[in-house]
Image 1: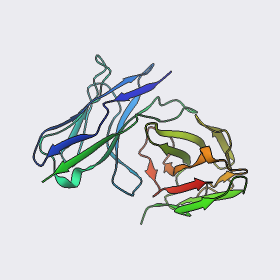
Image 2: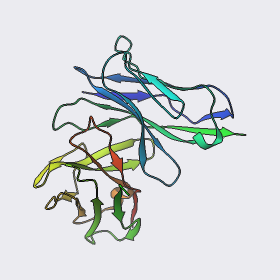
Image 3: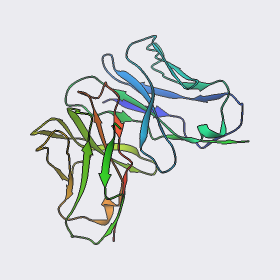
Image 4: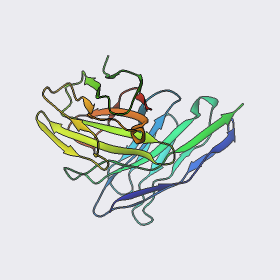
Length: 113
Length: 113
């Protein structure tokens, strides 16, 4: 079945450091891929998405490229801020009616000044 | 303001006492869904609804019921709660499926003693 594997945290960085959170997936066909972010005490928000191979999703300085050859969708940011501290979830949709959105287990990012 | 609302935000109850968590969205979305979030497990889908009067099971439906009588509302019902249903619950909605951005409610923290 479909699955998402993302690196375990917590990830602890200093402000302005480079961030990478790895995400790989297993799926048949051509899934859509997402990164969601959850700030403390809040629900999840869509951060970025990509719907086909080689697409690059970007938002708020974060980027992720849909790599079908390596089945990956790694999240990157060139310079993190304290306000980026949150839990990040990689997710996959098979785009087939009746199937669930599959989430990774989440990676906690903590950025210190 | 476009939003998904959930009530209550916090609930402590006892085993076997029926409860309902309400969810409402004001974006005229067709698709609605319930998730539970548990440490180390990420988010898992409980039930989803593609439209009014159309509901289906997600990955972990046991012990839960839902109904979709109106487009905007999607209540989650626990007929006989048990301690293993202690969790953080999120309602989400999207335009017409999981390939679209899902909008999440703020969450309901449920404790069953």
